[in-house]
Length: 396
Image 1 (cartoon, rainbow, N blue to C red):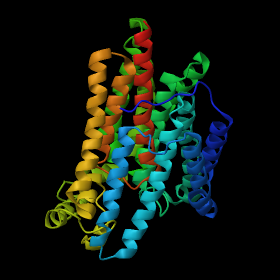
Image 2 (cartoon, one colour; image 1 turned 90 degrees about the horizontal axis):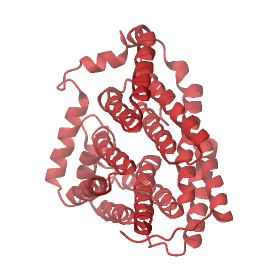
Image 3 (cartoon, rainbow, N blue to C red; image 1 turned 135 degrees about the vertical axis):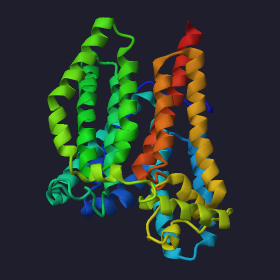
Image 4 (cartoon, rainbow, N blue to C red; image 1 turned 120 degrees about the vertical axis):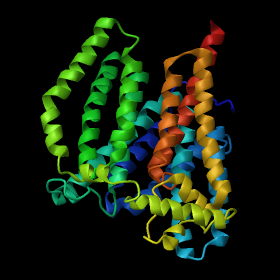
């Protein structure tokens, strides 16, 4: 990894950039301000971050790999029959590059990192506000999935999940004991919120993936405590589940989530779309169909809900391989570091990588501004933590 210079304190420019990003997170769900945030505020923060941190090419290897993948996707535009779709996807990708670069640059100062995670809490509050005003009123007895043109059901479930992870990380890394306790309590609360959102969005991903990860994270956090503290935590969780179990069962019975879980894999339309994406990828292995073009070739006129298949169909095997190698490499690096140094943050980073890799089987992440931004934030954080850990060990 490249060495990263680490300023010892936040500069005025750091604070200004963070405030602007918090503003973006808070208003970005408002259509009236969307153009201002995407084409005004974010490019300004991007330019400031490049100037402030001097060398725009001095990035960690994860960011470099991501930029190479997006460059290749841009080149595959030559294969696009539907040029308007290719242009639209490249606009999305440009936004992803801008936000990821901002996060990679700001993360070079370790003191900025907790504040960058905090942006996701603010953004999630904005999402919940949007959902309450535009979507929740349409849901009666969970007969329809919570989703809309601007925030579909899967995105809402994923942002609930990654906000919960951000809160967990803050509970691990903030230095103030009182603030740490607040984030640890908030983490428990957001677990409950995750399951409520799962009912509203009929998201099976919560049941399949999130519950095991939450259990593992709780174990990692409290297993090192005394047996009494661990037993108290287990008992508290058990009592809480027992108290609300009837309400959970009542919500689940007859809900769309129950109906979706009872579908056979053959009945699930996603399987058909995935098969089609693989076929088109096999027939166009180098350049694919062109960015964003698969949706026009799909018999159902929808995207795949799978990053790997979507990349393969749209931009060929090279784009898909770059992404796969990027994620696998992140996981392996964190695991090797954990095996060598044995400190808790490495296993947390590793677990994040594993579940991020799995999540990409269920949704298309590579065009999502905030989801890819979260990956780069965690990846850069892992490098900063590792450098600080090595430095501390060398002093000992």
